[in-house]
Length: 145
Image (tube, rainbow, N blue to C red):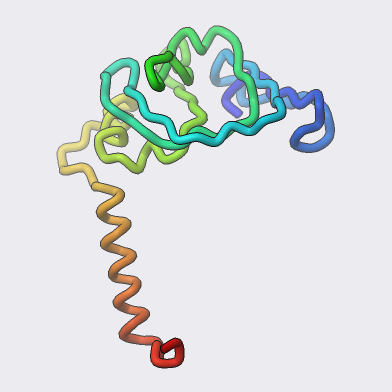
């Protein structure tokens, strides 16, 4: 979506064709068979901060923005940052789930956090426990026993 174009000449996602992207990164993407879905780990290229998530896509991306990697995944440069350092793009989902990675991205965009970063995973577990307690207290669970 951030690239110049997204091409689907083989009709993998619908009618064959090409669509203009938002043109925010000097990239072109061509959809290909074989969707990629895998857990990845790495570090942010600029800071060396660890990050992880899952990569999901079925395209091949090319052009000059790849020369400015956002991360190093398993030792190889990956993803992209615009020449003016204003836009970054990646195929990695869940990168904001890790507090340190989230903090790194917030600092990168100029948002200095003076408070402790929320530990998303712990917050999620706490809220799930709270929900389970509410369900147990307020729904006739004896029906399911």
